[in-house]
Image 1 (cartoon, rainbow, N blue to C red):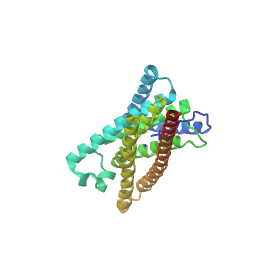
Image 2 (image 1 turned 45 degrees about the horizontal axis):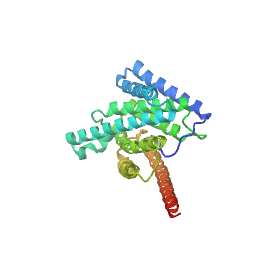
Image 3 (image 1 turned 90 degrees about the vertical axis):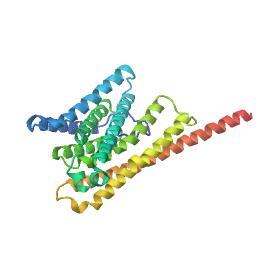
Image 4 (image 1 turned 30 degrees about the vertical axis):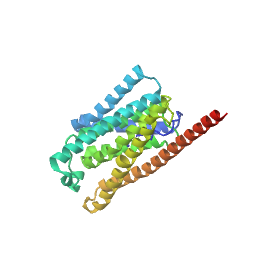
Length: 288
């Protein structure tokens, strides 16, 4: 659920920023209203998440680097690590407590809430709000309709509606398994920003193995299985917006995964091509 981490982000002013800033402010007003007037104190985890990652942004900016893209990517890496660990912990805890069959029952996925799932989802929601603000503040986006801002807006809407209605919390926790793959996307981006680009090194080769493995097993397969589960259990949903919202959300995620896979493939092929050219250059140099 994070930037693809394949290419360099173009820092460029775009009129779309005002629209997305307005939607972010409306979202914040909505969350504060729910907490203050409807006494939804459990939503304070959303505010805690946003504040925590903003604090981490300040720490990285103060002690490591002031480059906005480096800072943003570093905090995104931290979010992916925390979220991945949280999701694994929640799933293992529920598996031991209830078993797989009960865990993945339709009523449990839609109407139930696994232990720690609600605060974990709130915390991640706070991160996406922070990240949207950080990219708007430093203009870390490009294009007439920046896909990363659209992606974050869709996630904020879906997550927040689920948190307000207290439905499909467990389904959304399952979608966050993809953050395990995002770890390697952010690592690759930071590694390249640090100037480590030699694809012949064992470290870079290992990174690509882990990147592709996580892409398949932590992103593609879980999202496909979730989509199949939704379609299979479609008749068990009520007449509300839960099913259309879930199906459209998963359709969007699967489409993004295809685009991400293509970006990864092109980046991988480009690095292999550069390595061959370097090897040929070295071979020709020795031949002379």
